[in-house]
Every structure is written in C-alpha cells, then in structure tokens.
Length: 458
Image 1 (cartoon, rainbow, N blue to C red):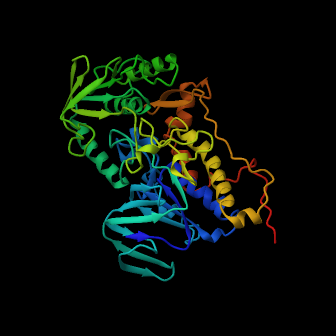
Image 2: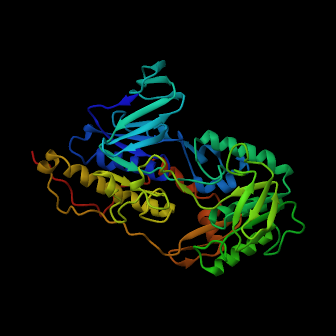
Image 3: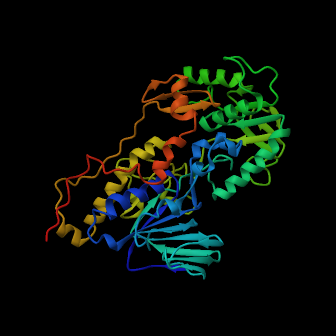
C-alpha cells in the first residue's frame, strides 16, 4: 500500500515526548500561523503505540494499577490532536521498517486493527456524518510515505519490557499483569543495572514487598531478597558519589542489597527478563568473575537500545544512535529537511528536560528551512534575523531518583537537592503532574525570543 498526495508530508516518527511535542509545536506555531501555503503541509505522526505514557513512572506503575490514575498514565494520541484541522494532522499506528533517503520515503508496517483515517485502504465499517469520520478495518500491510520533512523521534527501547513502550501500550499492560502475577510467590529478585531505572525499580519493589523500614535502618528480615548488580564502583554514576551513597542507604532501609564492580555475563534461560516467554522465569545469573545468583525474577535495567533498525547504517554512530548536528539537530547525511531529536539522537544525553529544551529550537529550524526551501517563501518573506536556532546541551548535574514513595536523591543544575525536594518534584508521582500539558500541547507557547516576524508582501 502506498501513500502520496498533493499535500506535502511532514513525517514525525515516534509518539512519545519528542514526537508528540514536535507535532504540537509545528501545528500551533508553524503550520497554523507562519508558513505561506500553510494548507500545503500536513503532519503525519507515526507511532508503534496509539497511546502515549509517562515512561519514568514505570518502576512504580508496574506494581499495581492503583499506583496512578490510569487515564493520566496512558493518554490517547489521536484524541490529543482532535482540536487541529483534520487536513493538517493524521495519526498512523505503525512501526517504521525502512528509510530510503534517496527516494525520500519511509515504509510503515501496519498492524491489523481499526484506525480512523481518511486515506488508508481497507473496509469501511462505520461512517459518522456528524463528525465527518470514517472507521476503517485494516489488514496488516506496509504503507509507504513520501516525506518533505522527516523528524526521527523513535526514542529507545528498554532491555526489560516492564520499563517502557517497546511496542504498543497493550503489550506493556500485558507484561505488567504477568509480572504482578509472579510477585506473591517471589522470594528473590535480581536487578541488573545501577542507573536510575534499576535503582528506582529496586526502591519501589523493596518498599512494596518489604515495607518502609525505619529511618535509615534496614527492614528487619525482609520478605524478599532484592539485589542490584552494577558494573561500576557506585550506583547512579551521573550523580556525585555522596548522593550515590545516600541512595544506597535508602535502598538498605527497604531490604535491597547492592553488588558493585560486577558485570552480568549471561543468564539462564537465555532471554530471561527480556522476552514474553521468559519474563517471569526463574533465572540463573552468572557474573563475569564466575559468581552465580539464583533469582525467582530477573529484571535487566542496563541502559536502552536506540530504535533505529530501519535507518541506513551510514546515518548511525557506533552505539546505534542517529548522528545529528549537536546545534541545529539536522541529520546532515540524510539530505535536506531531515532532523532527529530525543533519545534516538546523538546531540544530547537522554533526558526529558533536555528533550523539552530542544523542541522549540528544532521546530523553529524546521520553519526556517521550509520557508527558504520554496521560491515563493523566499520572495514573499523578509527576515529581520534568520540564523539557525542553536541548541546547547546543559551538562550540569541534573538527575532525580526517587527511592520508594517518600525518599530520593538528586541534583538540579549542579545543586544537590534534599530528599523532600526530590519527592516534591518527581517522587510523589514520577512527573505525572507535568505530562498533561505535554500530551495536549499546552506546554508549547510561542517563545518570546523567536525570530523577527515574517512580513508578507502583497
């Protein structure tokens, strides 16, 4: 199945913070008010999941649906864009499988299911005249899309399916249900990885299964043995050692043991903790020094894997991320009007606050490039100032790590934060208090420091 049309496609691959934010910003401030021929362009947002979710909340959300209001944790992407003209936005539920930078096309694998779009082939099952909406039953297939602009925002997958939307939101819920079913009988849990995901998961599990413990003292006779294994000399390597040591004391209080300078060499069965079949398998964890741990549950939390299998290798760096300009976010090797943002790209370390900083810069640079790519735009518009907006990564120590519902460690812009501040900002609901404005677009107001206004010549 192919797709091309008189309208020019601005294709955004990825339906999390980066992709959803880019789509909202372009619709509100570029297509809506700025571009000449604004009806010539439309946004096509492609996502493997039809729902966006607050991924940082997974370490707590995986334990029980009672931890968070589910309607806030999972949010429908199509509904978040209903306020925009239908001619300017379309959502595609699918997975990018091939990028052809020569022909400027991207291929999308479509799941079997029901979608609401006006350009896809399928069997019409319902027509709503009042909403001017057709419901179409699709067969699984491939959709090939021509792009004028391409934004790669596919993010990264987690080693454990418990920690994010590696596939659809329903798949994540299924993994959570399976994991929860194993918790009542689990006596030992091993978590590989001493970064935020591993430490937060250990803290949540420790408090949930072993209780709160006392003030900085170990829970007496913990019901479940929980072990964190890290290859480094300290957990939380991005934070200063004093904060890592404080986090370790908090973990001790909820019955968590930390093993340092140890690397997991392999596990038995292969794929334990990573695949659906072996998600809750009893696991033998073998270290590179020969030591062995037996675990009723094994959770790998060692970094993330960029979602770039569909991207030509010349565009990638050795770690699998898309190589892009660290200042303008262009993917230079992919041709004109191609950009990357978020965890999938090299311009910055993975962090939500850095993604949110990058979105206005990315979108204003797209705006500039689109205008100057057309003869009409060059003739009709006169810039007061038209240099590219420049992104500069904030490398100051900034990371917040809750340990259970009441404690945590962290720093912001180089300043150490006391535990109550970590709770206030993140630990109380893992940023859920901030996500509504991101998903519905209210986060993105027109910045005061944007370029001088475009002047239309009659």
